[in-house]
Amino acid sequence: MGVYIVDSNFFIQAHRDTYPLDVASSFWNKVKQLAIEGKMISIDKVKDEIFDKNDELESWCKANLPEGFFKDTSEVLNEYQQVIAWAISKSSHYSQNAINEFLAADEADAFIVAYALSDNASKTIVTQEVSRPEMKSKIKIPEPCNAFNVHYLKAMEMFRELGETF
Image (cartoon, helix red, strand yellow):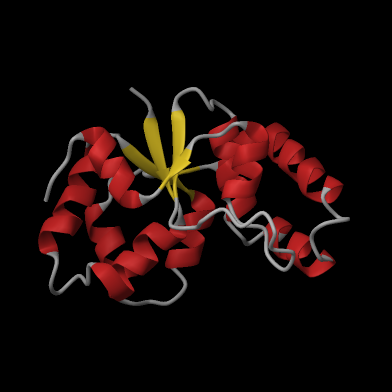
């Protein structure tokens, strides 16, 4: 069985909208369990995105996610170069701002695709983003995933694949 790589929006949307920390403890206990079991991981760029607000979510992550949960993306620079080349090749479709945002060093999206691409047979991205190939103003994670044959799904699909309930 492979590993699920969770995007920033997995945490942020759950915390802000669907599963607030003060109400949905069973959800967060399940996230902690899957992280400890190594079934769910993320990357350093996601950590940077969720550790920039000094809020409850950041505190929860620091207290509950195991050391090593956020993987180092410096190990996937070759794959990142492939993602860069793909994005640049789409300049006739996407606006320059969309490409610049997607490839910004502090943005997780291109890096999460690169991390999954490093072993796309056993890595699946978990994102709440939806494919919008017609969109020109933003590159959504599903678009490069589709181009590179990287599997992605939404959070509830991950829980179903794992046979998890909470």
